[in-house]
Amino acid sequence: MKIQLSIIMEKNYSGNDIDLIADIKKSQAPSKEKYHVESYGTPILTMDYGDIHGYYQILKTALNTSREVLLAELKDSGVRGRGGAGFSMAFKLDSCRQAQGDTKFIVCNADEGDPGAYSDRYILEQRPHALLMGMIIAGYIAGAQHGVVYIRGEYPEAVDIIQQAVNDLETFGYTGENIFGSGFNYRFKVIKAQGAYICGEETALLSSIEGQRPEVRVRPPYPTQQGLFNKPTVVNNVETLANLPYIMSQSGKKFASIGTEKSTGTKLVSLDGHFNRPGIYEVDMGTPLSVVVNELGKGFRSKVKAMHIGGPLGGLVPIDKIPTLSVDFDSFAKEGFLLGHASIVCLTEDFPIIEYLRHLFKFTAHESCGKCFPCRLGSTRGAEMLDKAINEGYQIDSELFNDLINTMEIGSLCALGGGLPLPVKNALHYFDAELKQYFSA
Image (tube, rainbow, N blue to C red; front, side, top):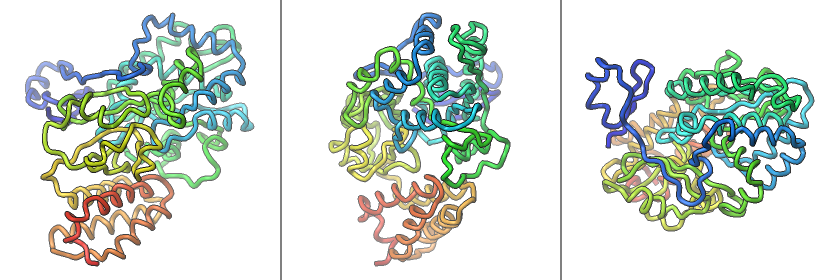
């Protein structure tokens, strides 16, 4: 299965579509490629929500319940952000709720730019109302009447589907003024991004929405106090927000009973084309990684030596660590990795790790907003050293290289420069035998 992605006539094409480009251009037919979707454990995000009007009874009940009760349910659920570090969603909403101001925002970060990740795209295109209802409920809890869905520019179908779903909600009277007679008002704005990876960072995303250059902001103040247009704002990713309808209909304790004590609920995992059965899998938190790889993905179709999990800033996991890991935040952190978005990109045995490290530094240099020196300069210098080592036989001074990545980790304003060192350190630790020829002692 080929994994190239192309956008033609505002439609996405992938997989075996690459062999049909000439016919696609003539017929303008939509892609026939379909990825596999499966639930292993409790279907929350992959569950078909059925009739829209019946589904939105969850919202009706929520809007006729006090904010304090809903916040308590959210705290009971233990739900954590699914986009990166796993921060408490209840804490964010409560912080925004307590902030002063009449104008507040709920912003959905749908700028899913991590290579190999398409779980947010799945929800946007196939479960749009789980996301939109989740945003309305989040707005009600936080006292926010405005929802902004910021969607990756490379997802043109997702933009159209979400906009149509928003239009439908307006027609049904499920958004706007006095929703379900509750006295609560809420409206959506859908924004198509322009393809900058840095906009996946929440403060750069907010600057982009404001029409500014997407640069990372210094924190504090945090968005929940001073975010979009300097108003209290909660930023969460698609998967996080889409859990709220389940939590409010089934209870926070029911959600917390799924998964582990500190990583509750389920997680969507994206498997790339190096698996025999690539696709989207929803698994209970705590599911052994070996189950995901061997039972759900049906193993590798080629010889693989490592998996980059959680995007370019996630951990580089050698395959011999698969038996020790489970799909939850704490298991990955304990082993020195990062679950993040839980996208899995495989590195085959014949692909040099040194080449991959150079790619990561070049990627970071290209996508850096340039706001801070450690990221902007460190990524460029790292790419230069690795390029010289590959092409000119240059021996990289190990102390200098370690100092560079530590400076990036400690001094960068956001997780782009600050997160790059994680997979680099993983590579230096687990693939020392392959890399030592490029480094001096």
